[in-house]
Image (tube, rainbow, N blue to C red):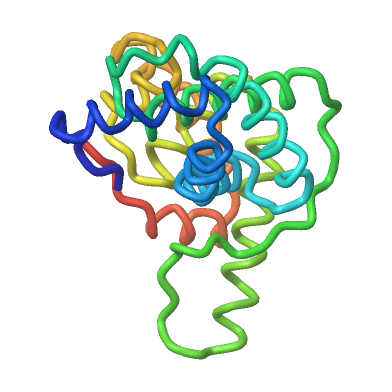
Length: 200
């Protein structure tokens, strides 16, 4: 679940952004190291796979470095770069044709012991879930994966996607409706969905 954004660190975020925008190589390196895992997590949750994530991380940081001069600290750098990553992955999803995915089990999915059969079932459930998400609207998919799968609160997803909380709730609801309709006919997918708890 996303952590709150402490205002005490905002001035440090603004200072780091200004140093990066001014061409300070050490600051740029520090920014990349500090934010890379966050960007990877966001992209991975939306896509469900590491395929193409490296390219999208690079695209996200190219956009971020180009925009750091406009960062004013209205949100944390984490939220700010998540917003850029969300735009990058939205463009990626919107321009591609749906296709079969070779998916990895999501790292945060709880497993009930080292049971190979259970691991295989979880992997197959994740594959089915993301194959289904591959066929829904990109905005709905992003809202659903960040809120339901990654456990981020609606208000955080709203900040990241620059949408109202009401719009995000609507997108999550629409995605959930599609997923749950399929789960009614798919016991493995239905069991997987029990792993996810809604964030407030």
